[in-house]
Every structure is written in structure tokens, then in C-alpha cells.
Image (spheres, helix red, strand yellow):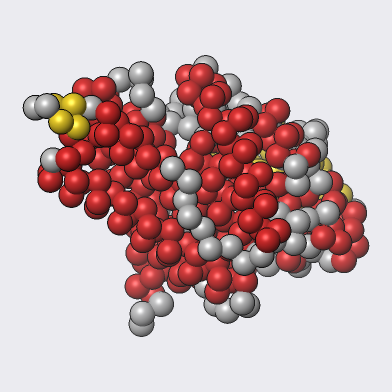
Amino acid sequence: MSVQRLLPTPESTDLLALTREIARDELAGRAAGDEAAEKFPRDVFRLLGESGFLGLPYAEEHGGGAQPYEVYLQVLEELSSAWMTVGVGLSVHTMSCFPLAHFGTPEQRSRWLPDMLGGDLLGAYALSEPHAGSDAASLSTRAARQGDEYSINGAKAWITHGGAADFYTLMARTSDDGPRGISCFLVDGSTSGLSAGPPEHKMGLTGSPTTPLYFEDARIAADRLVGEEGDGLKIALSALDSGRLGIAACAVGLAQAALDLAVDYAKQRNQFGRPIIEFQGMEFLLADMAAAVQSARASYLDGARRRDAGLPFGQQASVAKLVATDAAMKVTTDAVQVLGGAGYTRDFPAERYMREAKVLQIFEGTNQIQRMLIARGLK
């Protein structure tokens, strides 16, 4: 069913209507087949780019859509309800543009940001490493200044769009000064010395390539440093606050799809002479699912509205990521239960929703890390 939304402007209402149209006509029918074939839908991102979706929350002067985060996140939710790979991919691209948009110089933004937001390019965010996931400050990939260039050596892990991205926002070490020794770089995907490993074999989001990245004396111009040397961890964590809201919205979209599927099935499935949705046990299960979806949506919208108002929103982003992704895991699991044996087969998307939900509790900071961040804000 279509979610009833409270949107701030007629323009945003039209944007959400266009999003639903694209989700219905271009995404929903392809999702199961492409996920089963582990096929990355690069053409879908080109379509989204042509429609102005790859720069929605960024300034018009650089080719963005100038939409408030409150609206952008609801677009993410609608796309994710049709195809999770696409919603997560848009969220990752948006986060990959964040450092340049917010910490780049005016010259850097004018030079690179229009192409990054304009629709032809797709981004990736290269922070995690094989031995530096939740502990981002311990990363070891190194960028050494050599005249007018940096030489980069090391490996990154779990990179969404690895090998398919046109640019990478990279965090690399420029000194041994612990967390203050990390810097941020914008790396072209065709850079010599940069390569991607084979895609990981994942339980879900199989249409989205997740790979390691290898840097072997990869050389980039010194003007691709974003911010100052040593600002990288601060930039990375700032981007992650916004990115967590994106993942929360994706999680709500997935949970809404699972709820809609469960409700439709319960209306049609008859047992003991009547639809199973009429039994109180089923009513209560579906009611709990609906409450979880609506509560999670409220949590990400609260964070988004604070962000749009220029207020601190880091703790709200952690709450939204935690609440929404835990809700998605529970709601998708319950959807399988509502469908019974049918839910355990690939004849219905419930089992795929359940597999896709799990990773949402892991990336952009595990939910255990979110609990640490939320608790820290209480002290």
C-alpha cells in the first residue's frame, strides 16, 4: 500500500509520486531476477541520475536537487521498498559525495561535484579495512605525499560498488598520529594502481557488488585531498551520521514491503473457512509489525528534521539506525512466519527480505556501536 506522507512542499509531493512510479515500473519487476542472478543494475542508477536522484540533498549550484533531508530520505524509503540494492546504492552514493560537498574548497566543489551529482557517475565510500571495521581509527592504508602527488598503498574491505564505482571517497593514513593521522581523498575509479577484488558471496543484497579494494602505488594529484591532512576521521564520522539516516530509511522501506506482503497474503489465505487475517493471533502479529514500521519511520524523520534545521542530530541518527534496522529484521522475520511454508520458498519475496535485512544491522556502524554512541550521549 502507498504510505501516507506529510511532505513540506508541492514539489516534494511530485517528487515522491515520480519515485513511486519509477519504483513500480522500473524496479519492482526486476528485483528478484537480478538479485538471483547477482546482477548489478548499473542502468537503473543511470536512470536515477537522468531523473535527478543522485544529488537530491545537495545545492543546486553544483547540480543537486536542493531537497531537504526529510524528503530525500523518504525517496530512499520508496526505492528500497521496491529494490533494496537500489536504495542502499543511492544512500552510499549520497554519502560518498558528502565530504567534498561539506569539506571541499570552493574550487574543488566547482571542479568535481557537478559531475558527481549530475547522474553519470556513481560513488563508493572506502573507509573499512580487513582489520579496521568498527575501529575506524586503526586503519592502515597509507597515503604518502611525494611532491605534487600522493602515493597510496593498502587494502580496503566491504566496499559497496567496489569495482563498479566511478569515484571513491577514501580515508587513508598520512601520519602515525593515531586518529589525527587520517586524511580524506577523492580517488578516480580509473586510477592506475587501484583494483577491486572478487565480489563477496553474500546472503543478501546479491545484486550489489561488495568487494575489497587494493591500492598498489596508486598515485593521485595532491589537490584531491579533501580538507586538511588529519581531518579524515572527523570527515568520515560526520558523513556517517548522515549515512546512518539513509540506512534507517532503507530499512523502513524494506520493512514496509514485508508488511505489505504479509497483509496481502493474510487477506487471501483461508483456513478454517475464513481469511487468516481475521484470527486474533494474526491481527496482533500484523499490528506489531505495523507499529514497528511506523515507529522506525518517525525516528528517521526526527533525525532528518533536526538535520534540516541545523541542529545536532548525531544521537538521533544512531537511534534511527538502531531502531529501524532492528525493526526491519523483526518485521521481515515475522513476514516469513505469516506466509508459513510459502514464506520459506523463493516463490515469494519474504525470504529475500529477511536475508537483506540482516546486513542493515551491521553496516554504517553495527547496532552494538550505535548503542555505545547513544549511551555516550547520556553521560
